Image (cartoon, rainbow, N blue to C red):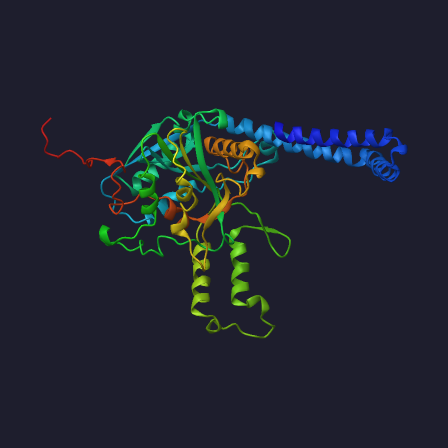
Length: 433
């Protein structure tokens, strides 16, 4: 907010300075033409100020006021971090996590104008996180305290052998101060390569939806991420964050109304099948589609038939400067590659801290460390839908979300992947008291 005010103030001051220079610049210096044009434009600019000025400052006030009340509302929420400890054996497919993810779809009723503009009320969101601390892999969920019992109930219903603990926020133990601090980082934020309706490669495509398959024959795309998280050494950390909230209506339909991502999917299907080009009286025949086109159409239909979430994903590798391994640039950049396909959808970095092509593009690494600071603050505050780091989200269905965040079974054999050493069971009924 302070940065926006500074930019606007500096812009207005620059206009005033230019006006004063052109006003008092001697015509004898050969700038008569520049003087005349500048004076004309700036005179018009200030003459029309009573008309555009109030509109400009009203917009500025509304923009800053909404940031202020939303920040106040978010700051008053009692945020907690839940750690999920996994048993040695999990025989559930990612479909179990797909069922659990329904609890994160908090489609609140319409927010009244009083709650929105005075109280700063916003839609509830959650952060699903996978982290590695010196190779020790852990799963976390960051949520408001009022959802704790609901989330625990859903998780225990599908995974009765897990253990859930409320723990301190691990981000407080890293004090990233940029160039002057002792920590350094490599980070990336991701977006989809195509429209939201196109699905990524999900657990169904990997055959993980089938029950009874032995662990040694399962192919879990999450295993490669777990293995990478477990490969780091002493003094190193990797944080992966998936921010979710129920999907909003952001798609502009052809009739001028707003729709959600399923409406975008319907328009895509019409375009892919050619139904939008069909003349009156003609019948549509699916036989005209190739096998590849039928596969794409079927995947979009299956994807848009499920609940959708506005999402944001970022990943960070952190270490003190004497422990930094900059080879992790490739690991962070290609972290989500197992979910990519050529004919459907995938992930690519929307922002990264890998550097610029030429040294003069970033004098003394000032732009780089500023970018790192913003991404770190965004992660720490779990910000994607609001400040301090407001970014455009993309939509993932429950199937896609369960693919990139679920509890792996025995197929994940990472030695540092901490699991509960023994299974809990009830006491025998004939135990003497």
